Length: 329
Image 1: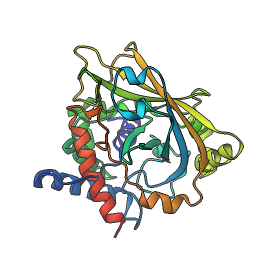
Image 2: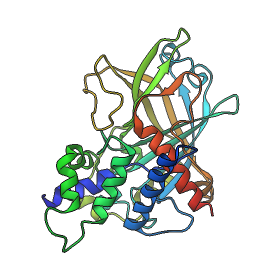
Image 3: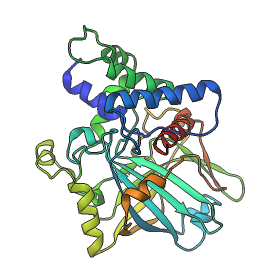
């Protein structure tokens, strides 16, 4: 396997911070093993996330569009603007990774909407266009294969064998590039969810979060020349001058589009619905403290939005709890 392809496997495999809640013994075991594999790759860093450890928290608000309420009965799409807590992040479990490192891709964007009734809705996205594997067990096995494929290991290495059986693992990482600013990167939801309207009609979709200023990506050479914290520092400096906005879109599935496999993106020609505007207003005063308390759960959803049959949603939920529990000790 070509060296560049192996790097892409690494980048893709580190896309989602997995972690969760109550589940079967088998699910809990997979989640524990996944977080263990992350700790093996990047070391144990007390108080830090197992993956996407480096980040920055900012305050925001979400203003729904007129279109959103027609496709979902969720209150977040029907009422006035609601506050949102936003966390940007770099990939890997290394809290000091340089923002411009290729291994810091894909960058993540997680949103916690504070709804009027006191409940929350969480959305977890990153810069990948699709995921390298389709299940939590496969993600665990990918991490293990990477950790077992160091220098001196005979060919085919465990990662070469894994990629031969999982083609998306060799290509997913290449879909995420380093941006000039976190305000200039497109973020995608690789998992499918389902809108439910007031009449019970269901519509599968995937999130797409697009910066109002457009996406601006750097070459690997230009990214390597940036300061180690340039992305996290630049977004705070930018917000001190003016708000930053994104359009939150929903890519709508059509008949035959798979909803249970995050390795398979839907065609770009699929219709997108404008859900509303996300406006970042200011960085939180103490980002490190805010990060420790935050837990984003993909199944934290209001009435009107439901998980699809994508098994990765539950796998992420299970592993988030493990990671959160460990960093909270």
